[in-house]
Image 1: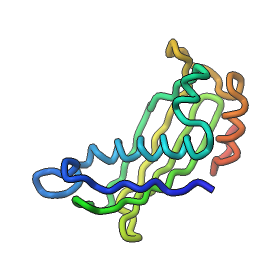
Image 2 (image 1 turned 45 degrees about the vertical axis):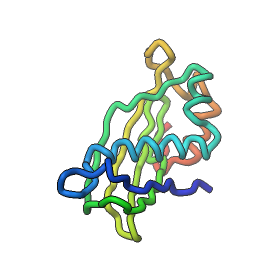
Image 3 (image 1 turned 30 degrees about the vertical axis):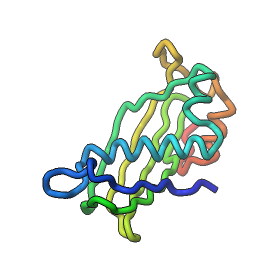
Image 4 (image 1 turned 120 degrees about the vertical axis):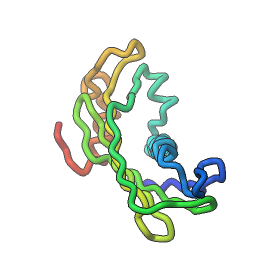
Amino acid sequence: MVKNYLHKVQYYETDKMGVTHHSNYLRFMEEARVDFLEQIGYGYDRMEKEGLVSPVISVNVNYVRPTTFGDKLQIAVKVKNVTAVKLTIDYTMTCNGDVVCAATSTHCFVDKNSRPISLKRVNPQLFELLSSLAEAKDI
């Protein structure tokens, strides 16, 4: 079972109004995604050793309510969809039980020379693992 990622908002992550600057949520997503992949046994270090890179190709972020210095965010990460060439991740960020941000990131799969690849063909083990975790299976 994958555990939620925890992030405590730091002072430097806030703006002049004292709220978490919106750009930091992208960093929180990446932190949570890296943690998620490590928890499922396929961290970025392993992916890169196996010649696989998965850059972000789109992000959608919905800010529900602000957070401030010291707030503790729980970030739930789920595989929304995976195909041979794309992976979409859902992020639900909560603070004190309330949703503060809901987001998705979509990634493609490329080799170390940035050429698009089929994950299903190049790394069937990772493809099957992500597929088993996906909410929507579109193989």
